[in-house]
Image 1: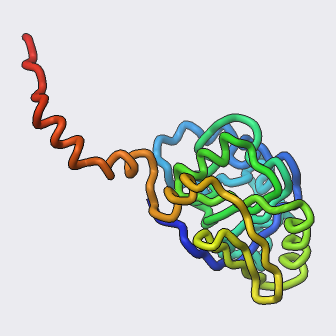
Image 2: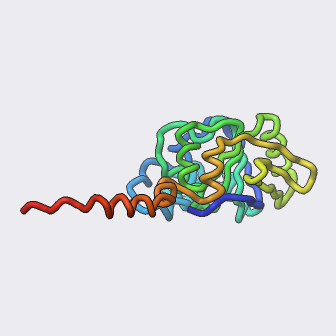
Image 3: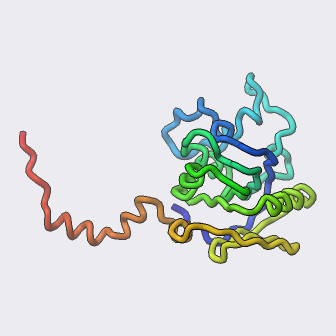
Length: 201
């Protein structure tokens, strides 16, 4: 898993509340078994009509938001079903972090396990970031997990809280497998002392 330490990137806004996981990645795309390739289907029902033709006017399809890597969204982002595919779709699209005033717990947990950062700021701070991003072409933010703060080059600065264990895992790129492999020597020593039982045919 790729560590998350300090990331500077361009910002897109999604000024909607209660964005659920079926809106992030609709159910018809959950049949894929890979973790990649979901970005093209991100927010599919908002970006495309029933006949597959692109809808005009969806914010992420605006030319000024090409190449963005930080999403600022309304409260209760990632609610709904527990599909991990929602995080995969956001990451595959190119996002490294989402900033909101609140997240669904399961979505936030899935994000952690995929090296994807969810940043909780106050509603007023989120509103200010949206205003700046909408008024400033190419608006950029720095998300600093080492210092637990978000800042731009125009005076905005806000701290955020994160569980210390979650922060440790993100800083060091440790998913559940990575955490286990930190004890690889002890596991190997245990297995050497306890050989596998013979297979009876």
